[in-house]
Length: 458
Image 1 (spheres, helix red, strand yellow):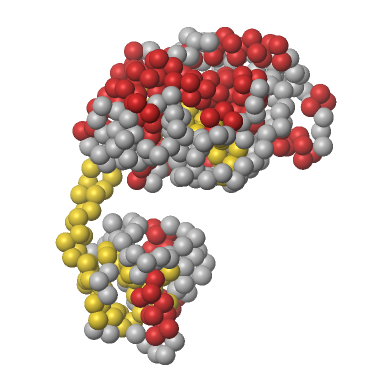
Image 2: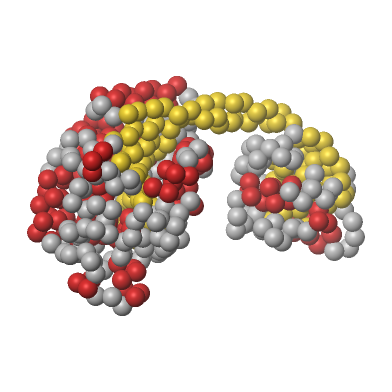
């Protein structure tokens, strides 16, 4: 699991269980009383009122990526980090809006009334149609070169499908849906791409069995460049006690269009800022990076950009990423324990972050928080480069999700305290000075059993 992380050797719950190892036989001694004392030292300082006030300010106006609302939020977050004396920077990156000026798909003279993908390439192409199924990696043949690819939706993203056929020389994409609609997705600007209904697509699949079919795609898309941001704040340990490791704690600061985004995700941002306030006055031996990402609602664009621009030396030193998203919804979680708090990993496997999270809730609340499998948030890019990562969220989400009613009135201070305390206690097990590089720790959280739940988030 951590084979690429030469700087850290951790016997996690899942590793110990699979190896049949008894915890007392490892080089990590358990001292639960000492662990609890350290929890109290940190957790008692967390203020739900502080977090609530942050949410109240941020949710006054929508923070859609690339708008003045996002800039307002970024400036506030920056100011809070700087007031703590943290090394802070605003990292800009480009995002794009698209205006469709023309969209047309014609097959054998009939207009299919298709919809151009957001981000489709522009162009007028007429070519033979070729069925490539779902255009999964490794399945697209050279036969698609110079032709328009007929693609079925499903399994991978629209962008990946377009990339896979364009790489083989396709001059256009005609994609049919899994349902009844024909307006979905975003392409990547390589070739003209138009969506049609499933019924239309299946009809073309049958028609191709009887001989060649010619199609014309006529698409004109205007691309409008905007700027979104990542905010990064670094808390450095004392040089004499620096393990060389990095722990990252993140949330996304953007909201959906016309959405106040109180829970999604001003709540997560509020916890990132609150933990920064706590840790800045707490002895540590590990660098902590507090991060807020723009453009998560566009598909984790900000976090993907952030990870892509990191030097490999930083990635090699990153040992855990804690992501918080929608952690304050009063009506989220239904009747699940801990208000529905759950830790989602990309691969549905336990890792260092989930082990520490479950141990933290077991100590703090006498309940081991479960884990599940889910992407759709900013833990994805960190996982993809080998960093143990998890998303902390109350699930299922509340009725206000992605609506104008996602306002401060629906925020629970109790849930804010709960989630921030969990992440704070878990992260502190890595960054506290008496756990140098974890593998030489004299104090560590006891192993707890925690379960996988196949729980839908919405």
